[in-house]
Image: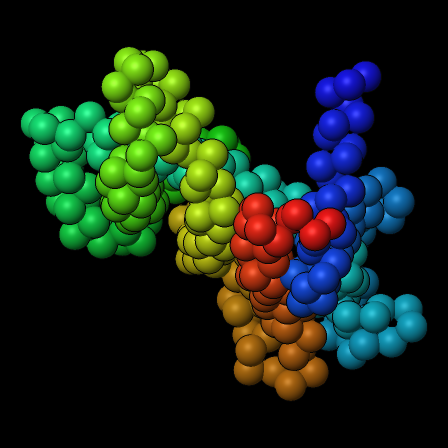
Length: 291
């Protein structure tokens, strides 16, 4: 009960701090709305399974708020049923990327010596590799069709940039008096890194997590659009790919078939960017004291 009460108190404080920044709070509301729409929406509004040739490329109306596609199916229903995979891959990739980068970057900076030199060279070499072309090749060779497999591949390609930034942050924190005191007391490397250093980087780590998630949205959508990842169903990337392949971009009546998935992807990314703007206030102790 005490743990639950503490969690609810911290959650309330966080929401109160976010509410001060209207843009950040709007981002949180939009993100929660998209998550609910993607996970609860399919339970309330079943997907269409048949084509409707009489309503192909219809414009927005009360019956079809976002119009219809080349099969006469409702674009809004496809948006509702296509967000889950996008969200799952994005968040799993963001979390895995951050975990790998923070662990390697922090250990490299703290241990130093030969280990730091080797890891720094590995990071520098890894950063010179064109990520998306390599990602496209791996997606083709491995026949990626599983959410977790695609997320792992994306994370393994995305971690070096963040790891180098984390290393620089840890090198700076390593010189602080309380870190030197912890080293003198021989509290152990895991304790110093995960109990002393990383908690003082939570703002930076959380914002980095958000931007890693945004990057994953770009990458997976690009792979699906190019047909390199065989994710089926009403995925936003699949919608955009089908719209392009069916010539919707060249048909004025089909504009909503293109704008619907593009708008959904853009709105998801904007919500994350807006949310990131308010996180500094949440993690800044000087600002929290007034709540």
